[in-house]
Image (cartoon, rainbow, N blue to C red; front, side, top):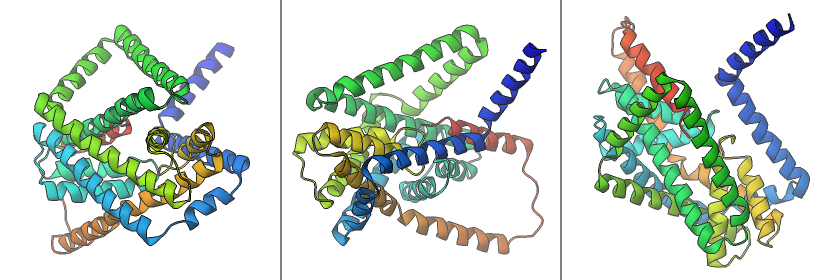
Length: 348
């Protein structure tokens, strides 16, 4: 009887963990919990100081850097999408990318904008599956380049951090590698799926030229984020030597990449407070800089709101000029939509 009940409870737990609502609730809980812990440690004053330090110069710089980063990221996505058979103009890609960043920031989950981008780009070519794959590869490529650059910066300039973060990154990579090996060893279906995904990855990234272009665009995106964080740090009144600033920026960006944040908030502030304290600058300074950086990050993608509004108005006009009877989507289209969303749930 006990074994039977244990099996039932285990099944229910597995089903609950698959639920998007449960995952979102867990992320929200962790994010809020980290912010509460940060406030309990340093107080609310550093967060308020960061927000109140916002000025016109910082806003203008964030918008400019955000525009450069968005164009570079949209170009990166377009390179991969075209190789996978999804044609998208650069101007269209920039607008879609702005909108996806804005939606990712303001809506729960952090991937709604990417799912919308994949569906929007794929619907016109009836290739939602490949469009979703292009988005997943593009996001993954950006994360890989960021981690690689962080490792280089930490190894060269981050003597105070490498003992902690390099160990965490190595352990994390080892856990992922072991999980993949175990899964593919016990499941033929998993092996086929992994081989298929690797083939699609090669198709999306192509040869050396595309790899260099993707890496170059990713470096531009990361440089813009580093510059924005540097501006935020200076704006809250903290003066940091250039090489130390570079190291701190990469550490904070790694913290912002932890997939339990809400709109970037949560672990980023905790990591920033820890990193600045370790560097001898004080946890409060790190929390203030991170808070202002978060505000500037939201402002930098604000043009995406205009793109989203324009798209909504365009759809409303189109719908008002078409017949009210619309045929239901075919089963293949429905399956493609579900697959796109499922793929994006796995995107970092």
